[in-house]
Image (tube, rainbow, N blue to C red; front, side, top):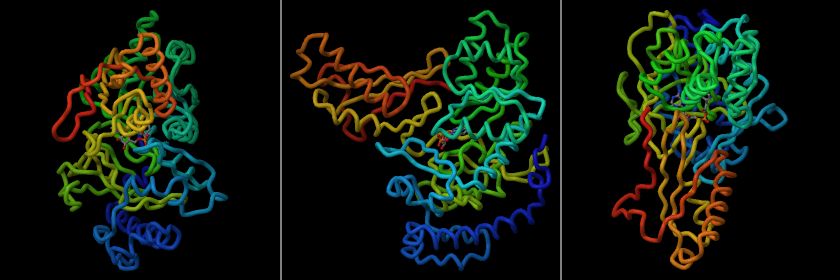
Length: 433
Ligand code: DLL
């Protein structure tokens, strides 16, 4: 099902004409309005007026998460705050988060793209959308919300957490579309069974839109079987717009990128050169229409490829393969982006611990857990058990206040965490997805 067939199945030549027109406009706009881009363009000797073909994008300098951090909070905005109607944020690599803004028009575009995404899963105005993505600074909750309202579906803005209640509401309200992270959908299914429900009989669910974290074909199979639904993969990132950047159609053979609004490239992360279609590399996006915070050749650190050939659904927009990894050390735990450096910065502030730590990530019964093991210094380790417990609690609270997810902290004896001669191994990810 299409939300906007004319655009989604647009003739490619016309689509590329539209992209080129929008690319020229956005380059001129950021050069004028955002000092960071002006500096970058000037330093690289790039004149935005020199772009005459889409391929000329390769002459444009990249932008990165570091640029966003340096511009914290609003320096990459191309409009004044007066024109911004919404602010979202996601984790940064250090204490500072990555902040993004939306004008009224950006919100309208976002709603349109999320309507397309939800329509891909068959959502219509007859549906009840159970939206268990988090509402708040995270873009998942409100992104799905606006798309579902645009379609005219009935939205249940349940947000995350309180799983027993979610299960009951899903059954009582007759939710038909589930929106949440793929791991949470399995946890919901399992909790429903534990509570005595039979998801195939007691729920009216027909499809789910799952994303915000990596998942696999085998996980899709499990979700589809357990919940008796169609499960599609949806992708996005705050810097580009949030969810709504790309989504699978019912063919489930790649995620159609909303190319009328975003230009996608795949590059070799080492050389920065464009990679040929079908080759894995780092995904780079340029937003073509964003007003509040346009991003130009933004290096996502996500690894994927562009799938050559056309899709039987007749959509002409390029398809990207499901995201298979990252070029950096970002972890996604229960849908929340976590950088080891965020935890490190907390540990470094704590006098009683040594700067040796290990993060152990596991998936226990479909839910991710994070254990932070950290060495206590010699002096404090001889202390009594009670004060060690108090220290564990203190560290846990500080980390939780920064990450916004629960963690376990385990203090270990001095010199027990394995030392490395090269790059320290800080993370053990035992999840198999
Ligand atoms: O996770 C936006 C989103 C919300 C997407 C709801 C889909 C559904 P951020 O918090 O900024 O935004 O995190 C973006 O999450 O760079 C990827 O590494 C990862 N990610 C998002 N979707 C997928 C997916 C939202 N379908 C980061 N598969 C991205 C794999 C994903 N990874």
